[in-house]
Image (cartoon, rainbow, N blue to C red; front, side, top):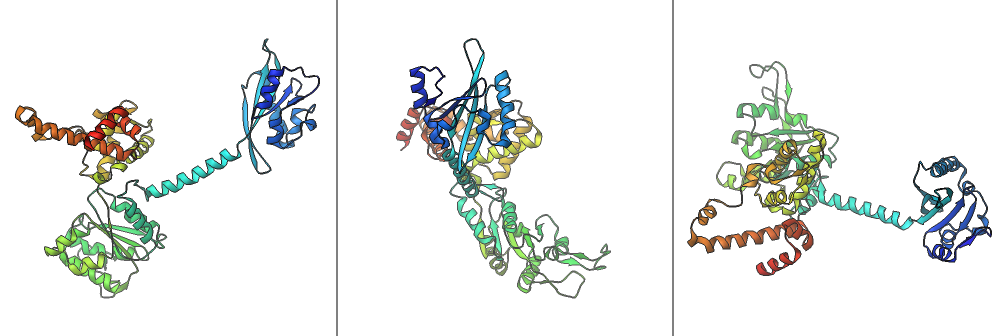
Length: 456
């Protein structure tokens, strides 16, 4: 540490300043630099002898001097307790903090400037940000969230097949996100600049389905006052999403097959063939192989559609995704409704993990929207969830067993099984972090360890 000769110092204080890892520069009440420690010399790459006796403002760049002067004036007057600013010099990043120093009579005696080299910290933050983005990209895909092992192959399949023109058949229970997959396949394809046209094959009566798909000419039937393009023509050079394809009548299946083979459509009431360049993405919640066997779906159409299958797992097989999804939905609905974001209570988390989700992600989303709208506090409690989330503790047979002492051992065994299942769910959700799993279950780590040992 170097001080001006006129600066009185205490040997202990000097030793402390000398040993500090932060760079210390002290200027007196006239802004004259009177102290520069060794760390400041090393961090800033300066020679203390060149700074002692100079004005504190003089060591800053000319563009920054007026701003620093205002800061020093605010520190001196007491309107500013301290000030911190980053500074990049010769490829290094520093954090400069300014503090007012006062004596025992609360009189201003000088300004202390502390310099810290935060280059490595900033680089680490940047690397962590990149890694976080990479992890987020691995766990999200087209608005879908999936950290569970069941969803990773789905995301990989979407990323691999989106740039292709191959026909995709998306299968999965209702509410699993089939339309989101279709949107992501289109959005990441070379056709993304052209339309994504959707038709729900189950929502239209049979007599209207063909006109919707293939279009019609003026005068083709009563009410056809002008020609209309069908969905295939509307999706030209884009993507046609055939939702609920399993509900398509057999007569329409035959015509759809011809369009897929010939890549042409013929409008109702027309005679000319119209070329269409369309990628087909179909979706169904039915077992089409079973429908083929039952004669309800054409086998040749099935194989024409099932070029690349993507199967979406139900939410009950994605335990790791339930709480992250719930949190995202709560955040989204809170923003839409202009209210603080709800936090999940431990009981609510347990209920969410315990539910079977016959409606899958759509059911969870609706439950979070309802809770956001109706919850009166800032914590989502068990009672804020729909009734079906709260009444799954005992099914009817177990409730009856409570009244029959002879069935006690059977009920105890079922309770053990249920407890073991909840422990497995908590461990899965927390990535097998026992402390977090114990907190989620509301038990101590020691108790969790004993129960894990008991249930092996």
